[in-house]
Amino acid sequence: MVMNEVLLALVAGVAVGVIFSLLRLPLPAPPVLSAVMGVVGIYLGGELYQWALQQWFTK
Image (tube, rainbow, N blue to C red; front, side, top):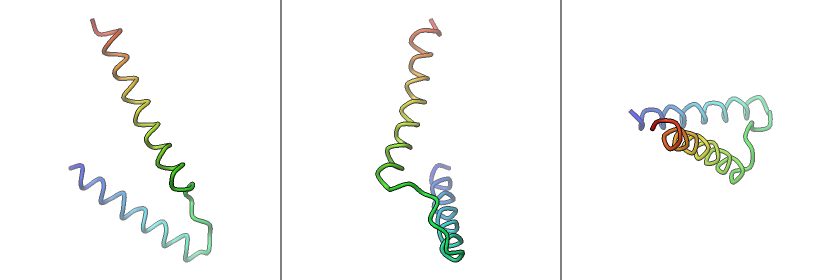
């Protein structure tokens, strides 16, 4: 299941890259390191929220 999501995301990203290149538009993506750190931050924030809920509100 997870692999299907990863492959679909990759295919969608490639398709968007091709379309933007064909239209001679700048690619709609931030620099690589900034993009990766943004995704990691979003993931960590979500995990921190779930952890905080379990620690303080489920006892």
